[in-house]
Length: 241
Ligand SMILES: Nc1ncnc2c1ncn2[C@@H]1O[C@H](COP(=O)(O)OP(=O)(O)OP(=O)(O)O)[C@@H](O)[C@H]1O
Ligand SMILES: [Mg+2]
Image (cartoon, rainbow, N blue to C red; front, top):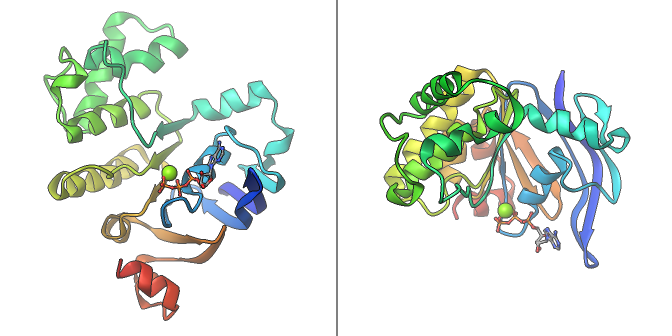
């Protein structure tokens, strides 16, 4: 069963074509990493998955249902099953870690404070954080903030997690740590994971499959070993950085 299928999707902004007939099938439960240069349309792809953008032409299918048939209520229901770690993973600075992670639970459930605390603790533990509930986000390191944002992204027990540039701005050690953590969360929660990044090392080390985005289309789709063995010049140049 596919998670999401992009069927010949075209998307332009101010006359500039960003997606040019993009076709890609994301399988359920896989960890797919989408690699591509800056401005290549990676964030645009994620936004189509959650209906924040719609194709100009072509279709996006969500578990085989065409997105153009979705109404606002369908999108809300769909999004509720998806955790999204945004590119600038903003936490609410005026709220404690506990309240940040609890936020979706307060919005979407009627759990008691006690139950909420329990769930928050469980998710913080999942991302390797303990005893930080009372802290304010500005007291945390960049890596810790990412982890709190990840705990918040998965607090509603999603079916899928989308990551937009999860390692940007982190030092190399923290970057490795966050990369491993994503794989750990993928397996422990048994979800579909879609990661967009230009971090090649991170992609090679965690992906089940890698999709390489180039000029608005997928130029290559395969396992990390397959992409490394590709004799496509453009791909090799990209992998060499
Ligand atoms: N809402 C929008 N309005 C106008 N242009 C947009 C919009 N969203 C994206 N674009 C343009 O589409 C192109 C692709 O943007 P996108 O953010 O998807 O790139 P990206 O691959 O995520 O890049 P980065 O690695 O820098 O995050 C860019 O040229 C961007 O300016
Ligand atoms: Mg982006």
